[in-house]
Image (cartoon, rainbow, N blue to C red):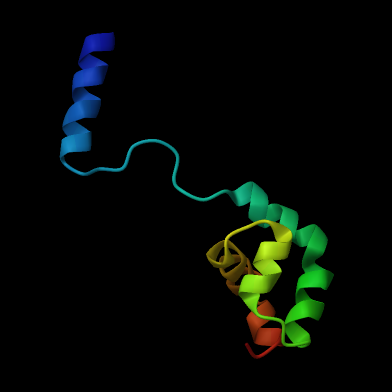
Amino acid sequence: ISQRTKEALAVRKMKGIRLGRPPGSSRKRESFKEQHAEIQFSIENGEPISVIARRLGVHRNTLRKYINEMSISEEIKI
Protein backbone atom coordinates (compact mmCIF):
# COMPACT_ATOMS: atom_id res chain seq x y z
CA ILE A 1 0.00 0.00 0.00
CA SER A 2 2.80 2.39 0.92
CA GLN A 3 4.62 1.80 -2.35
CA ARG A 4 1.46 2.35 -4.44
CA THR A 5 0.75 5.55 -2.55
CA LYS A 6 4.27 6.86 -3.14
CA GLU A 7 4.07 5.98 -6.83
CA ALA A 8 0.70 7.71 -7.21
CA LEU A 9 2.00 10.83 -5.45
CA ALA A 10 5.09 10.85 -7.68
CA VAL A 11 2.88 10.69 -10.79
CA ARG A 12 0.71 13.55 -9.55
CA LYS A 13 3.79 15.59 -8.72
CA MET A 14 5.22 15.03 -12.22
CA LYS A 15 1.92 16.24 -13.68
CA GLY A 16 2.36 19.44 -11.69
CA ILE A 17 -0.56 18.87 -9.37
CA ARG A 18 -0.05 20.61 -6.04
CA LEU A 19 0.10 18.21 -3.12
CA GLY A 20 -0.72 18.86 0.52
CA ARG A 21 -2.39 21.72 2.27
CA PRO A 22 -3.06 24.83 0.19
CA PRO A 23 -0.55 27.68 0.68
CA GLY A 24 -1.30 30.42 3.15
CA SER A 25 -2.43 30.36 6.69
CA SER A 26 -6.02 31.05 7.54
CA ARG A 27 -5.02 31.21 11.21
CA LYS A 28 -3.03 34.40 10.56
CA ARG A 29 -5.97 35.99 8.82
CA GLU A 30 -8.23 34.91 11.69
CA SER A 31 -5.89 36.63 14.13
CA PHE A 32 -6.43 39.86 12.19
CA LYS A 33 -9.97 39.99 13.53
CA GLU A 34 -8.56 40.83 16.95
CA GLN A 35 -6.56 43.67 15.38
CA HIS A 36 -9.29 44.90 13.05
CA ALA A 37 -9.59 48.32 14.71
CA GLU A 38 -5.82 48.86 14.63
CA ILE A 39 -5.61 47.89 10.95
CA GLN A 40 -8.54 50.11 10.04
CA PHE A 41 -7.09 53.06 11.99
CA SER A 42 -3.70 52.65 10.30
CA ILE A 43 -5.26 52.53 6.84
CA GLU A 44 -7.40 55.60 7.57
CA ASN A 45 -4.24 57.47 8.58
CA GLY A 46 -2.64 56.64 5.24
CA GLU A 47 -0.10 54.13 6.51
CA PRO A 48 1.10 51.81 3.71
CA ILE A 49 -0.10 48.22 3.81
CA SER A 50 3.49 46.97 3.70
CA VAL A 51 4.32 48.87 6.91
CA ILE A 52 1.22 47.57 8.68
CA ALA A 53 1.99 44.01 7.57
CA ARG A 54 5.58 44.27 8.77
CA ARG A 55 4.38 45.48 12.17
CA LEU A 56 1.94 42.55 12.40
CA GLY A 57 4.59 40.06 11.25
CA VAL A 58 2.82 38.87 8.10
CA HIS A 59 3.34 39.27 4.36
CA ARG A 60 1.65 42.27 2.77
CA ASN A 61 -0.35 40.01 0.42
CA THR A 62 -1.78 38.13 3.43
CA LEU A 63 -2.91 41.44 4.90
CA ARG A 64 -4.29 42.55 1.54
CA LYS A 65 -6.35 39.33 1.30
CA TYR A 66 -7.75 40.00 4.76
CA ILE A 67 -8.65 43.56 3.81
CA ASN A 68 -10.44 42.34 0.68
CA GLU A 69 -12.25 39.54 2.55
CA MET A 70 -13.41 41.74 5.40
CA SER A 71 -14.49 44.56 3.08
CA ILE A 72 -12.34 47.10 4.85
CA SER A 73 -11.42 48.39 1.42
CA GLU A 74 -15.11 49.26 0.81
CA GLU A 75 -15.30 51.22 4.06
CA ILE A 76 -12.01 52.96 3.36
CA LYS A 77 -10.90 53.83 -0.14
CA ILE A 78 -7.41 52.37 -0.52
